[in-house]
Length: 419
Image (cartoon, rainbow, N blue to C red; front, side, top):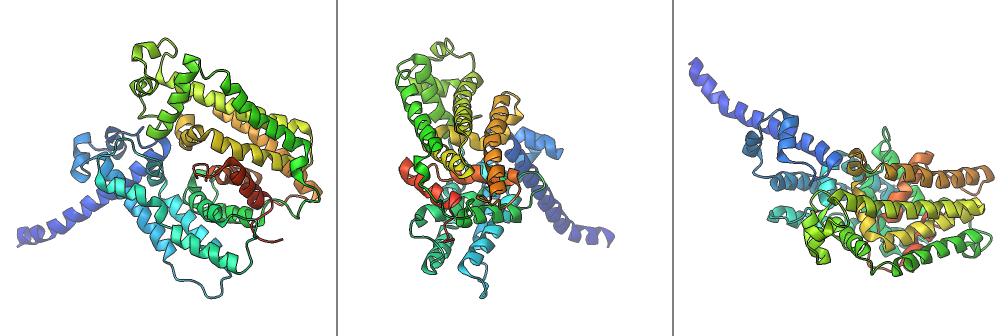
């Protein structure tokens, strides 16, 4: 009887143990994907961190893509569930937007690894994963469209604000909000900061003068024009043609999945010829990102050096960041893997330049708080990191630089809602 009883319980125990192990594998994989990126994480890495043999891992998941599809499916289900939560009758349209923003941010915090997968998987072979990733924009778009339309109909969105961009910015920025949260900052606080910034802006009141005529804005325009002038004189150089092609390859395939062969093929060179100019794939990536990072740092420093009012300085910084998101779209896409890049120790210049750029924002914001022209919807660090995500969350939209810049100024600086 004892043996019969044990045999009866064994299948249930076995299923529970298998499910527990799958749950552990998914949790470990999420942490690894978030830290190292999808392509930078191997099944062997996952097996090692779960204390398993690599072969045993395949008993639970047939491939890394199957594992990734499981993670992304869970993310999708949680996002969809958040959009289907019952409305609260007492909520105003802005309350409803804030409520969904908080829920999406909490979902984001639970699925950091799946969000890394959503940045893209090169050469996908899994049909389910491909379908999941291609459908990601539709998970919450209709709900955001409804909520923004309700706010617009209630006269809570100024007519100058492009609501198509607004709902896309809400969707993207909140979905990926976990990537900008400083350590110890709750998802709710990140969501509130983003919503406050988009709808109430940083400025406490409308400007007395047209900031586009300020000296800081003129410097911003000159910097933006200089990017094209600098490139026009060097594009024929072979080294620069390699970098120009490589930036697109890295953005499309991901940092870890890109090989020197991929880059050589994109330029029309042999790998041997490529090595005459760069000794490794990482050397090419360093050259791309150091060039972009130094341009951004120099732009921030040039605007800060003007000594304009806080509003003039922030206006000019937003102009530069908006234009850079369009002009350097591949580099911005590559930097979505920021944590992975910095963790390698090969890109320390990114962190150094980031601190210098943040200093320009910090000083302008602090001066604005002192003279009453700026309000901060969170800690300085949180506001600046949310700013970065918001300003570059819609860089891939097929709209002009001028339209995106105008939108960013109308929302982030002045606020989508009437003051």
